[in-house]
Image (cartoon, rainbow, N blue to C red; front, side, top):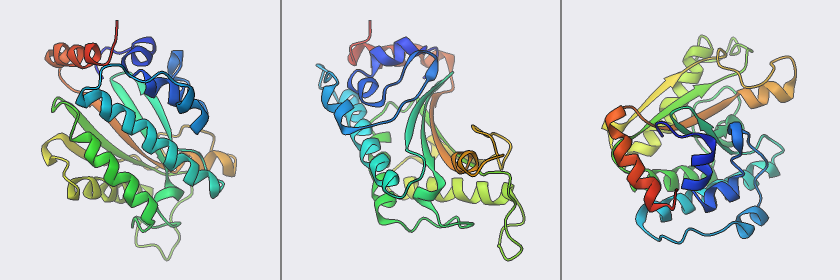
Length: 221
């Protein structure tokens, strides 16, 4: 969200910051049920606060599901203009595919769709597909990683839209291998780079007063 620094994020989202360990500088740490149990619940039980708490619970469940397969965890990270839910590709897709088939992943995205609808309409959602630097196989229907990453972003977008997210506040994009978050020199790094990011942001400076109201409702100082 516009003009949020890491400290404001931690204050504004209360129990979510405790559960997700959003620290100064946007550092992320491992999620666990213990963290959310030890976090302080939000005192203001308005719709926005409830939505934030459900984001935390849903991401924790999804992260534990992915851990069982040995892949990177689902994470929440601060960005300059908002925050990002980062989903590993192996949680959503089979290798080289852009079709979401995992029932648990579909349920998770349906929950996120419901939560998006509870945030102010000023908050827009950008679904961004990313790959590693290994091109699709010769047998793939995708000619390159641009097409694969775009198709994956669109698949997530369509599922969110099919479950109620307003089409005027969401878009999708594909970045191929050109926005890595880890080194492509190792399989572990490539696995982290294969992801779909759901980016929540405010695009207009004039929205800052509305976002401030959301922060105030969440107990920000």
